[in-house]
Length: 308
Ligand SMILES: Cc1ncc(COP(=O)(O)O)c(C=O)c1O
View (tube, rainbow, N blue to C red):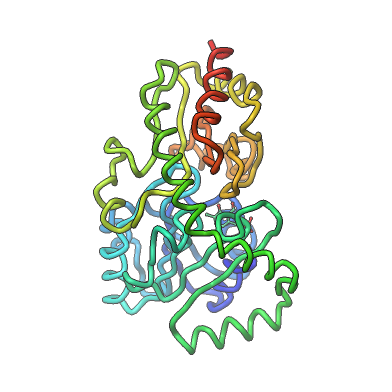
């Protein structure tokens, strides 16, 4: 969150940001409940539709902020199209690429001036640290961010940095396994009679599958969201019945984690805003780990057996 905050401190009161509507709940909280107090203005759009991004741009707009795929609805944005709009309008273009990681996606190839990752997740990969990084190929931005970081003091410890560096050494191996397992688990869920819908960018049923397939390389990462036919009670029963999968808020580590966004990661997003975004109370998010996929499927099977 400090990495996101550092980017937003490039701006001043009265500046306006166009943002993807489905962003991690902590990002909405920072934007709406902290940064608006300092006069920053935000407009949220469904960035899967580049026209909505363009229409939201005002004379005081300074940056387009995109999360892709999003947390938790896995919406995908066409970075080439949105990057073109940002460049034409002279706006900074920043991408939260936490879910995709550099293994699957390089937003810089589509003109992103800044790419942000929560290193807490896949980059470190083992649920051992909390951190974030901003990547930029612009010297002027790098200097400003370095100054902000030093002035504010949101600096990671050397030990945490070392753990991230250790994690990075196995990033490609882990991501290959996360996405292979993710695909198998998504297909299993899609075929499951107790599941109402599954969202995974690798499935052809995902509305932005073609864009995801063209801009993401080597697969689609390990994040899946789904809804059960039995609604909220069924989701709760499932989450309380898993044994191998961990009921946890975080994501992107070697262990499979199952989450209930409405009461966990996105609990502080007001209910009407959650509804408007399409984030239902019955939504379950799965961060598929690198275990033997048969073990994950077996665990889900035994948990589903307890669900009405
Ligand atoms: C997409 C995304 N961006 C940013 C963050 C914030 O990361 P952290 O918890 O490491 O501050 C998260 C956390 O879940 C996230 O999912």
